[in-house]
Image (cartoon, rainbow, N blue to C red):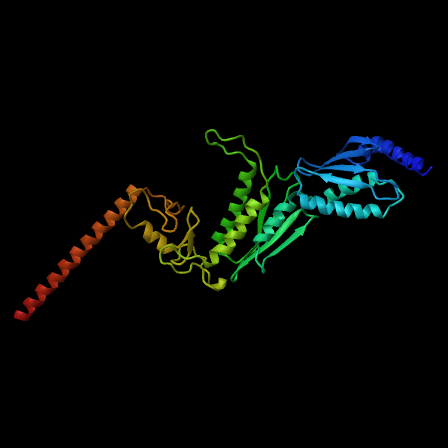
Length: 345
């Protein structure tokens, strides 16, 4: 009698799943609903996709339903934790049908936790942070707020995860920073550019390059931000080898034309403004000027001069200096002659 009663409960639940599951739980699809297994797919987006496999144990529904969660996109650690939480919830309703409850619970979890699609990336970002850095999650606004500190310098930013992540890129916005404006802009704009490259195919792909496939952009962008903030407060000028930024951020130079203003070139190395200009204006010029730190060609928006023009300008300046020297020598010699004539008279 007990077995027949259990089979009756299961049969009724299977009929209800076939009849009501997809209607009551949008974005679900019943793959199988037989006594041996219930298999239901929950797909909010192509990345927020879970397959829920349920099996009926003996003494069901007085024993919790057996479940296995599968996903090709969500992190295994997240699925393990979600399985444990769902099983605990099922134990609260023992004696009642549980399959539809499980589907509804999982669907609601995905809706209320949009950051579940990047939990693995968030864990990797956390591993990059120092003891004084801060990372906060907001499931309600689908944002990750990060504050990175190095010495007395810091940058705080808010990273918004779009609904259709990772097909759409993350958006990065600086909320507070005590670096000079040039570096604050560079940090954020490079984050955005790295994120864009993760989801948009290059305009001119390389020959024999495989078809472009969008990839997650959170870790790519935020890792750059963390590494940069941790790097530059102690970076040295590639010419004078002195520390670029003063120990106290209040003394940082914000005037972009000042001698000690920090300039970053394309390769990522940085220089004091006057050190860079002097280096770029000094020979040799053949093949362009290379960064002493890495050997790469120096590109900078303030210096868009060809090697030939730079050499011509330097030669012109040297010629002017020689002419001025000749004039100075002539005046000096003239003064000496006048002094001699005056002494004779």
